[in-house]
Length: 362
Image (tube, rainbow, N blue to C red; front, side, top):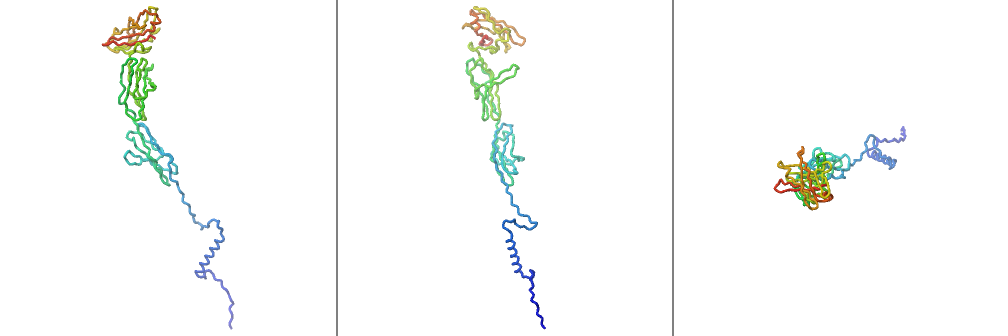
């Protein structure tokens, strides 16, 4: 007898399906997952995977202040400086001599570079390269100018002798660039030092003035530029006094063999006026012989008063310091007021031609 088999539906497993069925099944599952995840949700990654990192961008350097050219004196230091924006900046300075290609300067790796001015470096040019991981930029050139101090080539005339009222010109010639001139007169201080004073308006290579007994007799010029300054030798101007421009107290005249002046340190004053028409005028002079052949008899004293010359008698006395004191006395037929306004004339007859100087009493 035949027994009928029950109808059994067997469930097919994935392993029992063919390759095409498995591909279709996988695709369908992916679509189902995509449909279930909202578009705004974070991406799903496999456990343990590292998400990609965006590459960072470093800005290349940018120069904000270029190095400036420098002018220095010989031996002085010139410094070139650059300013740049950017991160992790590196610097390298280079130098180029006139007519040569540039070369890197060893150790010059800062935002500044300093060098000592030497005449051999005049006209050199400097630049700097600024770099970082983002790129590099090169500065403009900066020029180094080295200026030597002036050199006086021709000195002012050392000694000049003129009569009061004469025009005198002193000149200097110097080498250098950008020269400036300022004239000075020299004054002896009480302690024996020299004091220098600027002469107002005397700013040229030549200095012209009218000689007077009050004019400084020791003059020099200072020549300067960016490299420094140089003073000339002193120029001595000897002024011969006149009756209308006599030496005042403290002044002194240079004669042939003597230097003479009123002795203002004498007790009671250098001049004494006594009597009245006739009037006696007695003045004390201080004289220094600078010639070994000088004789006291070579000096003659005359008082000029009221347009007339009155010879004076003179007594002399030798001082221990090598100078002489003279007391010249003249009698004039004038009132004391007129006599006291008189001018003394001192004449040195030791030379081939008499030389005179004039002194006012007060």
